[in-house]
Image (cartoon, rainbow, N blue to C red; front, side, top):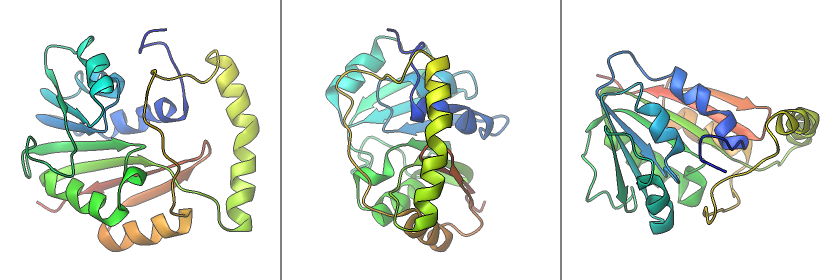
Length: 200
C-alpha cells in the first residue's frame, strides 16, 4: 500500500493542518515527518518544505517520494543543529509531542517558528476523568465507520509508536499557559488539535 492510500487517526486530521497553512507560506517544517505523507501534501501549500524525523527508516521511506520542493532530514528536532532557529513560517507536529518532555517540545517548536508564523499540533493524551472516558467511547462508532470507509487503519512499516503520559486536561492547561491565545480542540478520534500564531 502506498503512502497516498493509507488511513489512520493521524492522517484523518491532516486536513486540519493543511487548512491552517497561511497564504503565501514560504517555508514549512513538518516535525516527526514519518514517511513524508504530510510533508508531500504541504508541498502544494508552501514554497519549500522540510521534514525531520529521528528514525532513519522513516526518512528512507520519505525520500523515495519527495516532491522537488521538499527536503527530508534525519535528526532530532530537539537537538536542532540542522534546523534554522525562527526559520519557518509554518510548523506542524502530528503525534510527536508525547515522544518527549512536553514543555521542552513546545518550547523548541516555538523557537523554530518565525515571528508571525503559525504552529499546528495534532496530539495525543490519555483519559483521566469520567468525561474523558465518555468522549473516548463516543469515538468508537465513528472510528469503526470511518475505518471501514477507508479500508481499515494502516500506516508505514516500522513507524515508532509511544503511548502518551499526559491527560487531556494537563495538555489543555499546559498549552493555555505556554501558548497564549492558542485554539485548542479535542477531536473525536482520540486526538486534539491546536493552532497558535506567534507574535510578529
